[in-house]
Image (tube, rainbow, N blue to C red):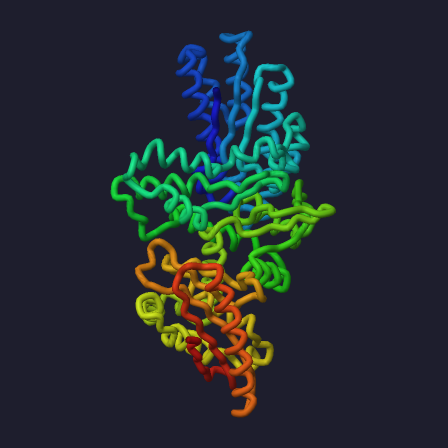
Length: 480
């Protein structure tokens, strides 16, 4: 077994990336020759002193065949495209040189292909392969099969619910020590939802998120204050790297679709051509390949992608919050926001949150106001509400009689007593009489949504109608 792992590579330019790549190749070849007693120290020297990864690997294979003429190698490569992320985002010319016909990455895979053809490398398995390098790999390495969408391999990429339950029962909770079904129900919101092929029968739990949670949960049987693995939540930088390359209009369209409806439709790019312009479908595809979107369905070659779980949803909102903060200052992290969230959690009082939204509204220019709508108002609310672990924040939840604007469902970490329904209205300019009519209509609508939610949920519910008018004035109606 020979394994290369590129997940720890951090280089920001092609020279650094190449050095780290060659270091990983060299270290693993040394480990392999030590483990399987291949060659003498003198014979190993050309292997580790080669001028390139290609030369090192070719020398290694020659040495291997000398000592194991009938031997077979199982080659595994983990996080294959990790080292291309930075170049893809910021140094496209360097990326083209790296994976092009004469590029050293492609040359490396051509050597692997040679020894697969000779039967020495008997099995090859690589993870983390995206369309960024797949085109170059398949051109110089056309002996492998892309199994990303194969339903047979879907469950390799995560835990099924049965596996998660068994994992908790077998290693974490003894008999009577914790309510396993309650734990699984909570984790279903946070970590479940991945599907890598439309034919997959069940959704999967993110294994990294689950293992991190269980490590914190063990012993105390208490939910950690941070339900998201910091290594995953930093992936908002991946979102930025993928979408920032789009033209501004396409970028805004993509993010608005994902945040407002939590789904987006697009073709799936199987091969990425570095010579062609970057477009909407390629961005959506890369979000999928990086685990930030997952497959819901497919029809006539058009895939419907959705956000897989609540942690990933928070990542998208963190990206949007960064945009918000660049424009309006670091508002989403200010102390008065934390205080307002505490008042909403503990007392069911929404005034602080509404005033925080008003604070942002006052910074809008008259040009911004011209195109402002309820959709934009909701985005400001969601940006401020979602950066906490007290609620699962739902935008436009589907109810029996329509779609509410915002629903906050308590998490296991919420010490409060209420779920929160917020219905929003925005009116640019209005008189007192018209405002009364809008309020009456909005109250009836909020009552209707509230009654529907109460039928579906056993939790206590507080309902509010919030109306912004004349730029940043507001009224709050608490629905009893």
